[in-house]
Amino acid sequence: MPWIVLLLALLGESRADPLAAAQERFQALTSYRATVRRIAGGSERQVLRYFYRKPGWIRMEFVRPHEGLVLIYDPGEHRVRVWPLGLDGLPRLSFDPDNPLIRGPHGLRVDETDVGTQLANFRALQAHGKLAVLGDGEIAARPVVGFEIGGLAETSRPDVRRYRVWLAQDSLFPLRFETFGRDGRLLERVDLTDAEIDVPFPRRFFTP
Image (cartoon, rainbow, N blue to C red; front, side):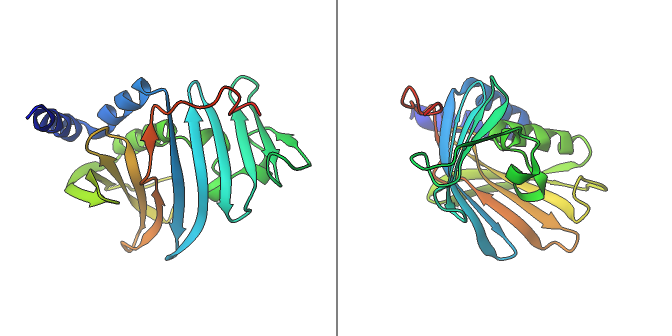
């Protein structure tokens, strides 16, 4: 069947250079949305609805913590607009992405949270470590193929020594990122298991 041939081709492409292939796929898409769940220390720390549209628009709707908080990054103005009480509430604030008040875990900036940026970071790490194939699996009933970057002597986080990424087999879109410490313990997991790509958004979705 044609889809089997396509799937085999995708797997061959991803195993040859999975992160480069995933980056190429990301460059070809126009948008995506996902529920982002961050788990650290064995408990769920953050849940938000995430929306992205090229050339870099980002909208984040917080579910937990700070329910109702909305952030929208405008790549043209290079500003982050913030609605602490939701789009219908006041106040409405504006920040530079560098502002510590709106930085995420480990100092992550809003304009650095998209999957394309994360893949670029992983490729940079790959240049200083070893890439290993973890094999096929399934996440939220979606077939995935996993890869691990290990052998890292130093990273921007001294407590981290290994990273894993799980790519959807059909699109090579990342559905899970994992971070491991020196002792092999899972430090953090970020899931995007319901991700959808090339999603059409309403005209003023990013400029309400």
